[in-house]
Image (cartoon, rainbow, N blue to C red):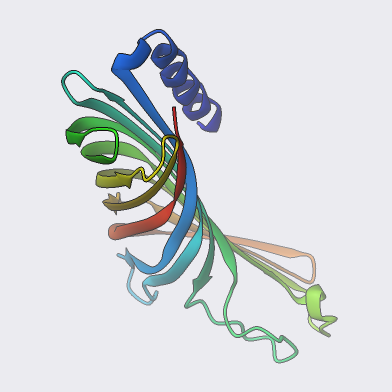
Length: 219
């Protein structure tokens, strides 16, 4: 999936190279502001998976200046905390740490597009992936235990992006994405003293908000 996503972005940039001055590009990176996300669990006896995420956002926006047709792609790479408790008394952590990755691509329209200001809104589709892991050996614990949680969910979303260009090529941007992580399975794998246990439980999905601020290069 990541290879397909990278191929689509490359194709967008290649097409823009033949569009001349009629096509403008914004390529940038920024800080994904901390937000909370909850995946609601359907199975009784299991808590909802609550996460707080923040990290790096990489994005591309292209616009056809003549009519405002625009495309948008973004990749979020985040550190994520969780409400999953660690029971190992030797641990210096209270909850499982994890990583989150969100990939989205879509198209829309930019009603504002000139040399200094840009505003566009988009319909987007992609996926959301989170993984959490813990190993008692990190803390030389007397208990030999490894725990891992992970989920992969399709993510339809809407996005709004604003760009201000104070000088010819340097721009500042703010963008917000609201999506819904579709129902999926959370996988849980435990290894204790050489014994493996795997479990999975269904979620009904959860809303996801991705606000970002950053800088970009206009060309």
